Length: 130
Image 1 (cartoon, one colour):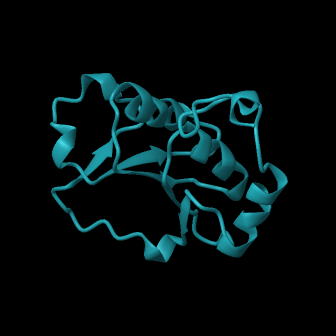
Image 2 (spheres, helix red, strand yellow):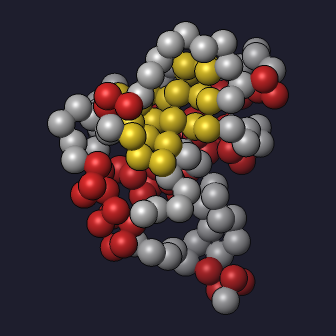
């Protein structure tokens, strides 16, 4: 299975109001967060529909500019087609939309095993890693 992106079925995601979990609105600017991220274990970013990609930018900013090391979780209208891009932009877990088969997700990672350019997780380009 994929090494870095944890894939959860819809029923596995629990939102119990944990104070160490921050839910960031889809239109919020991560750079304007007024909460100390040192105490935050997980940040949930919402995809209200799969065509709305603002959460990708939020994840990237949280990882690269703000240096957030905790779990960044994709929630909402999450489909397996999005998982590889989610991993590359900094997400560490994703909750699949109700009815989406989690076992099919590994195929996406098998199809796209490496990239030439760097990303939020692996910043060095491929030619410098070889």
